[in-house]
Image (cartoon, rainbow, N blue to C red; front, top):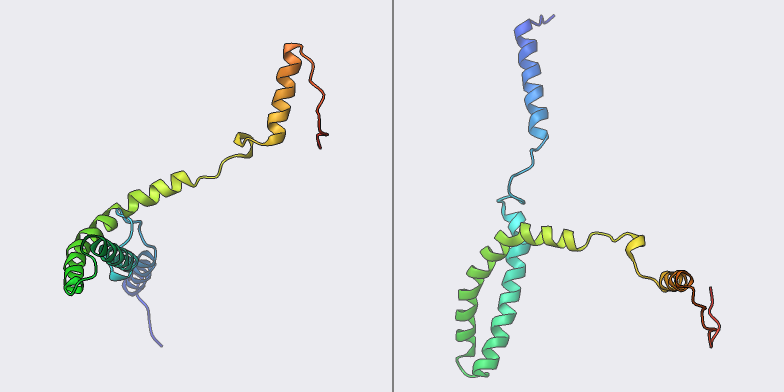
Length: 140
């Protein structure tokens, strides 16, 4: 029969505690991680966008000539290394801006036709004026 000492129990507790702490991830100060998997969407997006953009601009500027492919690849290989870091670095700011712009608006702040009619009737009543009869029936 195996005996357990206080030291072995404390060591086992420390190991299990370290495993639990390793499983709980601390939030990073910078959004995303440095792994290739976190960079892949930005790499693909900037690569494809810069590829198409440089092709369109080269066609507009030069037309389709015998050296089009070489000029296009030169332009693309110049633009993409600039576009990727710019997009990757600005990603947290763009995400924050998108969250701010897409916040839901309360229904009280919305301008609806019935709200306009109600406000108009209240203003007319406060001013002591009479409402003109509608030419067409109003459905309420």
